[in-house]
Structure formats: C-alpha cells, structure tokens
Image: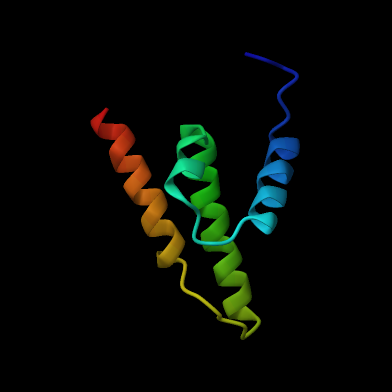
Amino acid sequence: MNRDYNKFERANEIMNELIKAPLPLESRELANISDRELSFLKSSVRLMVEYLDSLGCMIWHDDEVVCQIDEEEQRRARV
C-alpha cells in the first residue's frame, strides 16, 4: 500500500476537477477514474445534491449525473 496516497488530497483534486468540468461528465472522463474514486464521486454527487436541496436550491437532479456513473460501473463489470 502506498502510504504517500492521501485520500483527502485526492478528494480535493476530484472536487476541483468537478468544479471546472461541466456536469454531466463525459464518458471518457469517467473512464479515467479508478473504481474506488468512481464510487466516491457517485456518493459525493449525491451528498452535494442533498445539501443543495436542504438549502432550497434544487437546480438539477443527481440522477442526471449518477446515471452516467452507473453506466460506467456496469461497463466495467462486463469487462
């Protein structure tokens, strides 16, 4: 196990990339994310949507993005 790997730094990098990237993400971008990070991304998107919803700022539904993540997970499971 690489002890230099800092999951909080990686989470910050992912969130910074999400801020720059238009949602929903493109399939080629999802293909470059590891399985573990893809799962983290999925849960992060759902948490962000729940937080925005709690503030009364529901702008889009998490299913729009999570659907693409689910498709990528299914594609990886078949391979």
